[in-house]
Length: 138
Image 1 (cartoon, one colour):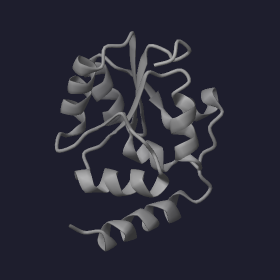
Image 2 (cartoon, one colour; image 1 turned 60 degrees about the vertical axis):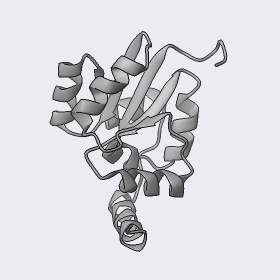
Image 3 (tube, one colour; image 1 turned 180 degrees about the vertical axis):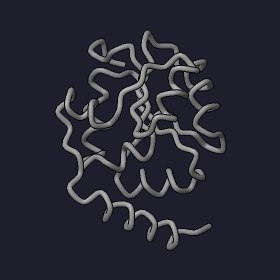
Image 4 (cartoon, one colour; image 1 turned 90 degrees about the vertical axis):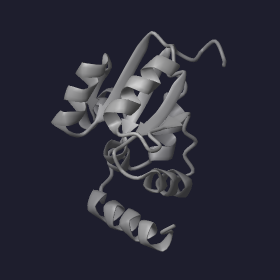
């Protein structure tokens, strides 16, 4: 790890990542001020794997077979940093973050603060992802 990297663990809820116009660029840019960057979701593992592979995103962690709540607890335990921040989209994400000792940022607030561009065609992105899931069904 370079000295310039921060001491923060940053997690994107998958739906928040899907709202970004350039998720790969956001992920890579976040590494400048985050030691670890990953994805959490309640979706099956193959959904995250397909999405991140298609977008060429290299994640340090992801939910795997665990749900979001268990993943947040596990990541906080295994990734020892000064801060743990979850970027999400729903009130339940905020509640889980609070219950597991994470800070929470809604994707629109995070995007505004970090200068990230939200996608113009979020619905199209969701349809595209759903089609990929069907094509890559295990």
